[in-house]
View 1 (cartoon, helix red, strand yellow):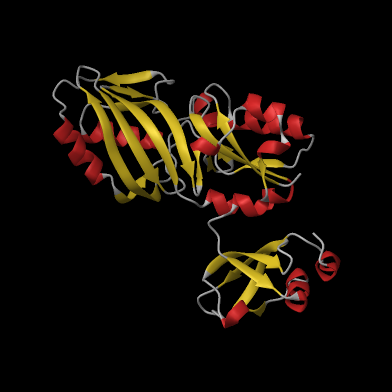
View 2 (tube, rainbow, N blue to C red):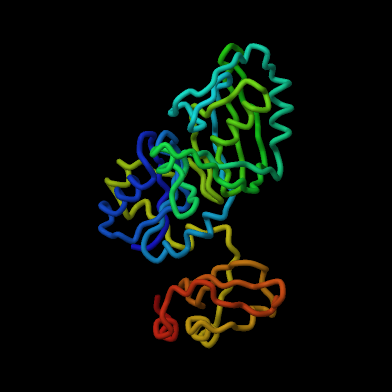
Length: 302
């Protein structure tokens, strides 16, 4: 049982809860995920099983998309509506035009600080654990990219409501974006609902509910190849496949391969692992993740 599982995470569960569900359902502890969702959030959570746990980083690095709802006129200690309100303000004067200007200012390469209640580690300790213990420690700011912030709906009022579509790089906290939007509008803002709609090439419409997965586990499991359709591929002959499985760099197929990671296959279509071509050596393919033994590669079996 190796592959990727596209799960529709319901609100109220942690990402670890979903991982535990998959471990029980598939009878294995070799289960990971490619990026957490807060307990209150819902949407697409991509799990990895078996050897695919070694491939999760190639989705973790991908852009993600969200549908977000933000309440203006409130500030909380967690950045969302689950936390304690720390300040209030009136959003009566906020207009769609002002919101659009702020969204434009937060689109592109920006710096943000992760929320105090997050899984980010500082000094070897999770921020959310420190926050619960009463230690207010700020995470260092990080550089992220917000590719798109699209205003879908604006409901004016003392507690104005925004609905947005967000497309962003890994490491982006939509809770932090909500706080930043509220700060730039000078009224405060909290994230009141979040739905993840896309992780790299995978979309929410492809995800299965926990009930659907429990009823037919293997029917929803994608192969490692199906889980990474966005990566280019290289097919090796028997001699090159054996060398790759031994951990040796080989000549790039056709004399040159795309820069960056690519899926490496045997001639029969079986996946050997992930290789990488660097800018400094465009004609050499180096193993990055080898999923088979040299003996398996030499026999053409995975």
